Structure formats: C-alpha cells, structure tokens
Amino acid sequence: MKRIILISLLYLSVIFPQNSIVKQFSKAFADVAEKAKPAVVTIITDKVISVDDMDNFGYFFFHQNQPRRKEFKTKALGSGVIIDAENGYILTNNHVVADTDGIHVRLIDKREFEATLIGSDPKSDLAVLQIETDGLKEIQLGNSDKIRVGEWVMAVGSPFSENLSHTVTTGIISALGRSNIMNSQSYEDFIQTDAAINPGNSGGALLNMDGELIGINTAIATGGVQRGSQGVGFAIPSNMANRIMSDLIQHGYVTRSWLGVFIDELDYETAEHLNIETPNGALITDVVEESPAKLGGIQEGDVIVEFDGEPIANPANLKNIVSLTAPNSISKVKIIRDGSPIIMKVVLKELPKNPRQFATRQQSEFDEFGFNLKKTSSILKKKYDLSKDNGLVVTRIDPNGEAYEKGIREGDIIKRVGTEKVRSVSEFSKLANLSQNKGAILVLVKKPNGKSRFFTLNY
Image 1 (cartoon, rainbow, N blue to C red):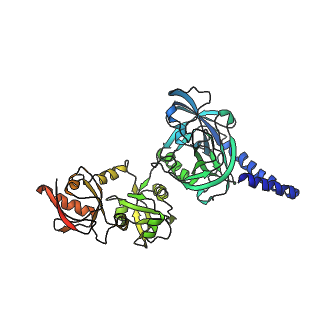
Image 2: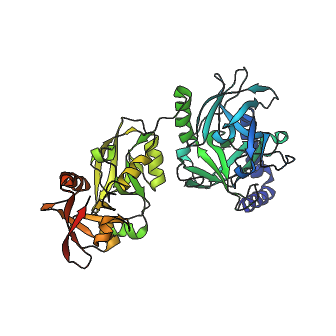
Image 3: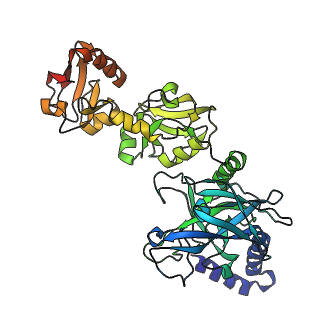
C-alpha cells in the first residue's frame, strides 16, 4: 500500500512539477526526523543472557558475532526517548534495562553517560532512567487517544548495532488497541505499525507527523525464527506511558486501581442473547466479595460497556482503563443488565499485591464438598440449558469429592440447604457453617431433567 501511494505521488509530481507533492511530503518527514533524532538515545547495558531468553519479539539484542553459549555476558542494545530535558529523564522499555549490571546512555553527539534507574514497571514494560548533563533535547508528548488507523508515523531507534543508531523508518498505524501480545498478565493496549522496528529499536520513539511522541516501540512479531521486522511492530501508547512514567518518577513504582471482577470476551452470540446490539464490552463472570465492584452493586452476568465515559471494547481495554484510574476515586460504570442500561458508581481500591489470590480462594471455597457454586444468571442458564428456576449452579466439581460420589454433577441447581432457600453463595456458606457441628448438610438439588431430590453431604 505504501508503495502504491508513493508511486501515485511521483506520478502527480511529474504532472504538476511546479507544485511538487512529493517534495512537500519528503520535507514533512525530514522535518520530523531532524527534530526528533537529538531526543532519541542509544542505551547500552551489561547483561547476562541465556539463549533460551530469545523469543519472537526480539526482547534481547545480541551482537551478531557473539558466540552462542547457553549463558554469557554481553552488551545489550536498546533505545530511549528524552522526555524531560531539564531533569534528564529518559523513557524506555523495562526489558531493555532489567537485570543489568550497568546502564549507559549515548546521545546523538556521541557523549555517553552512566544512567540511574528511577523506576521500572514490568507489567507495562516501561522504565524511566535519569542522566545528569546539560544541552539535552526532549520530545513533546502527543495525545495517543486521537491517532487513527492509516496515519503516517515515524520510528526512531538503534536497530541491531550501535553503528546504526538513530535509524529512521516510516509507515502507517496498522491497528489500535492490540492486547495479549506478550502475555495475559501484562497491561497492553498496543499501537500496531508497519514501520520497520527491529531488535534494538525497543524503547525508541514512534512519532506522528507533527513530531510528537505517540508511542514507545516495544515488540515485533516475526512469525518464526527470524528476528527482523516483518511489518508487524507494537508500541505502547503515549497516554498510557505518560501515566506510568509520572508514577515511576514520583514514587519509583506504579499505583494501580482494582475493580474486583473476573471478565470474559463478549462474542456476537452471547451479546445477542443478552440483548446487546454489539459485542463490545466486558462480560462479568464473577465478582469478588467485598470488592469495589461488589460494594458498587455490579453482578455476575452484567456487561460493562462504558467506564467513566470511555467505551469499553473488550476485557483488556477495561483492565487498562481501571488500572490507570486513581485509587479511591469515584467512577461511573455503565452496564447492561437484562437488556437495560444502568449507571453504577464505584469507588476503586488500590490493586492488591496478589489479586489472583481471590480467584484461588473462590475456586476452592467449598472444596470440603468437592464443588464450586455460582448464582444463576442468563449466561449460566444458557450454558447449562436451565429453566427459569433460581438457585445456585454447580459450575465445577471434583470427581473424587463427596458431592460427585453422592451423584451431584456440573449443571445441577442447589435450591435449598435444609429447609432454607439459598439465593447466593454467601447464603450457602452461612448455612453450611451453621450445619458444620452436625457433621453433614442436607441440600435440595434440581437435576437438568427437572426432577429434584435431597442429598446429604458429609464434612
């Protein structure tokens, strides 16, 4: 596509030589490069590298003549962007400077300085360095929320070798909002570009045609053993980088917020069943007890479609927006429940050190009986082909547990404990605890065939 555009421009310049579009186009790129290059730096680190660390994204950057031992010490190469000339702050990738014995920054004028690591954030793959010197040039941050697919962009960095520092490549924005590129535990909202990004470009600048920084180049997809650019590169949006950078400079770490929900993709079929016009949003599959979501009234089966006025495209999008919202702030959450929109107010809390502990706790809460329970919802009714009966659905069962041995199966509905109806997992837990001194509980279970019977479950 880029080749077709350039050929078309050349054709127009032949027809209209006095008003050369190509010259204007070329000058625009040259102006951006000339302005940006002094603010892009080469980062050289001493690292102990394992061959096993090499991956399809080219995270670690080797000299080509380095012998291929299982583990060795080498100089690794990356890039960075000066974002505060007065204080000497440089933004780069965490993987460029992680686990290093020394960090050196080389400027375009060949001056070299030892850098201090101010803070790093592996979950977003960002880090902030600082050097002490005068005469630095900085790049102005742009608004990555305003960029569009198809816009021209420029990448500046140091691919492969120190001798190739400040290499400039151009391309377009290929896509926005890419996630699950590195791993599911990362906070990802990548800009995808076809501008050539190679090993060593990581931490470098992605610029719009106004010369503003709209992204930090981070990863490439090679599709195989090749480590060079295949036209699929990824950059962290400047707005996300700016928020994380501010925390790293102020605190040395990143403060994130937590909603306390487990979320899933919303496909077209599920959206249709929930009376939602488009499959955009995040489907709530579970809500953590005493979490901001629970206290705010959000329920399993709700679909979050907006958060503080921002439309939610998918679970990764919601995860990023929530995490970058200040803890203890009041957020307006628009959900779809039973086909109707509702606005909820939620007070976010700071992300726990190990949020996955809540998933583990919920999954094993009733292991003494060998099953997990969830409140019936439209999603579960569809999944297990249930009737309109309310109760608790058995969503997971241990084949070696007490419940399975007695004949309870996944998809069964527990309607009562003893003579008491149960409408929530917390009610079941409370009644089960009251029966614990008796050594067993009596539960009324409705089977998929519509028949109900009582089961005695021993502790």
